[in-house]
Length: 290
Image (cartoon, rainbow, N blue to C red; front, side, top):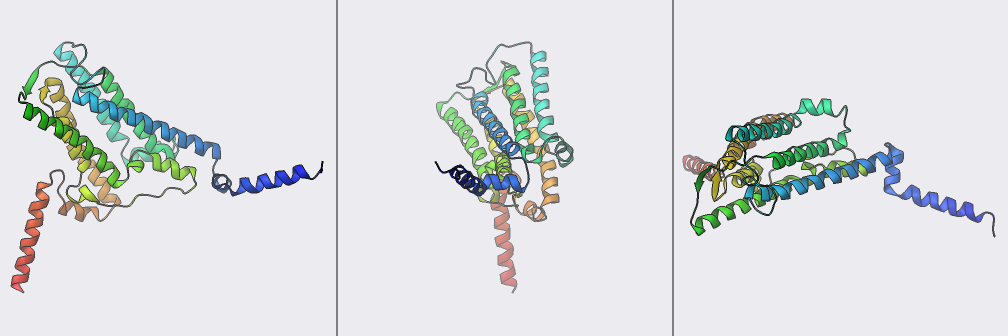
């Protein structure tokens, strides 16, 4: 056997290995094992979110899950109200504090920047799963819709709300929103590539179609129990408070957002039509004047 043959094979192996994109990334900076670990961590966080998202459909809609917003053992009303308020408050604090720029600046000194978003998604999912697990039903019925047509309409609106939520995430960048894009870019060594400000589809009608979808989900129920009402009121209040902080950050990061904010309504698309009509009227008056 030729003694030089193993060395030829070894040189060929090195040549092929050096051509592998991920190996080039490793040489250019960064531990390849760490990059792969971060990517797998991001995938796991996304899968946890996905399971939480699917469970939430059944939890709020009261179907196909072992514990829903109106099922499970009941306790005294004061105790149930206190526990539910605590669970909602915990989620609101986690969701808001971890989204602020000052927290991210401090947090990324502990957590690597590529997995910061994935960690935020994981913590949010855990907070929601805790809420699903410990939520206390309160059997008092506030109102109910008895007609089949009314029930079907509300159930359809509920389903439409979930579709709006999902569509709104994909219209901007679903995988960036839930951390997968960041860990993938880190894996292939492309660094941080921020997503620019954009207003596709539903975002031309309202500034926050994602929140519009959530409001449709929270309030579209044929039977509004006290537990569901507490949940809907608390989450609605949180949404409108969160919008103020979110838009302040958006104006700071994107100069064009201030003009977008003046032009497009916050939640309800009705104002878009009114503003469009006013714009047309003003344009017609300008044409007449000229």
